[in-house]
Length: 256
Ligand code: FBP
Image (cartoon, rainbow, N blue to C red; front, side):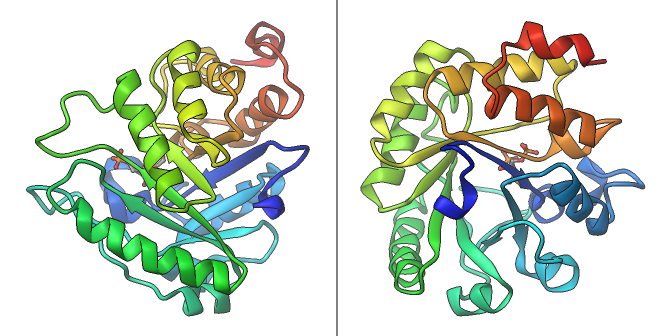
């Protein structure tokens, strides 16, 4: 994971929503173009860029450490969520990946399949010198509240139990409860997932501040950056919170 860390902290930009949500749900004329995001990743000095293999093949420019998502699903499939492998670890390496990303839907009827597949991929990734990062999203009929303290900590712990180097998990809503998830993750690096674009910069930065105060390594975020009117400005604000450890009141002076 060291390749994704700067003074122990990290800021990752995620752009796999074209598969997960579809272009009409999240994209406009600017951010529908992967080249726009790849440029933000380097100009905004992100620590990592997460892409599905097709986008990586055609747009990755080698400037920011790459995470290739090796599974994914669309928003059209219904029922209990499942996401199967769609890219080999070997192929991810050939694209320049320094880590693989894999989503586990904890609590889904299909979780055993994902546990099994991630176990194999994690071992192969480690053999090839790549980090294994898991997006652990509690989901399905058995999950009542996917951001409760208990369930988010369960997600974090699952990442540790299954051998992940880092876990991307949803924010619980407050720093104190998120700290329990960070503790449950042990030596696994914790990244807060972004979610839909917040109504104000301050609202989003407050969550980021809370996650960092809870001991998170950083954030892995998409829409709150590339849906922003000024993505590079948001990147700068995030850097101030994550790397410079500034309070939101200090950075929000330059915010819109
Ligand atoms: P955002 O910051 O835009 O929420 O992206 C984080 C992410 O994990 C993406 O990598 C992924 O495409 C998406 O969220 C999945 O979202 P959902 O919660 O709808 O499954």
